[in-house]
Amino acid sequence: AGIQLTGASYSSWPQVEQFHAALVRSLQEQPGIEAAGATNTLPLAPGWRIPFLIRGVPPPASGDEQTAQYHSVSEGYFESLGVQVLRGRLFDAHDTAQSRGVVVINQALAERYFGAADPIGQTLISQATNVGPLGASLMKDRAQVIIGVVGNVKNSSLQRRAEAALYHSTRQFPFRHLYLVARGSDAAQVGAAIREAT
Image (cartoon, rainbow, N blue to C red):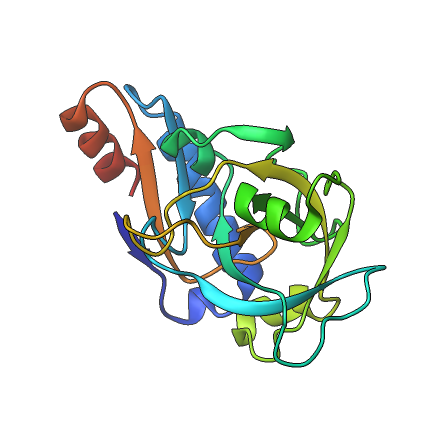
């Protein structure tokens, strides 16, 4: 289910973040829900492809920039899709706008840019120049610490291999439009739970 926030009540990103956090929490508490979360882009829908640097690593030559798809997800998103955590941890309620910037990366990014090295604790520096008014506060620093690695999700097409992707927390990088995702054993009950939460 898609959620679009409009109007003066959601003119600042803290208001947007707080609404979505409460909505996801409400959905997670509904009967029949095994896992629930939110995202700004669903599987098979590419995120923004943005270049980034790895702190402590010389920048690549011009024309050979490191890029990844940028996504923003809430707690519970990966659990809803059954995406495996390979290293580190996922986002939690402590990853707020007041805490350090953090990201979770996918296996494709870890293998391509870190090889056999452990990416946990490494810092990525975004080279985005225009991320919209809500993301501007987070992106002023542009540096985010990698806290986890997850399995790949097909983010372009079923025929192509998953591209390198990194995930922000919706608490740190919110969007007015998000998709709710939920999992349960009874599809009708899950649908009813989403309607009740929204």
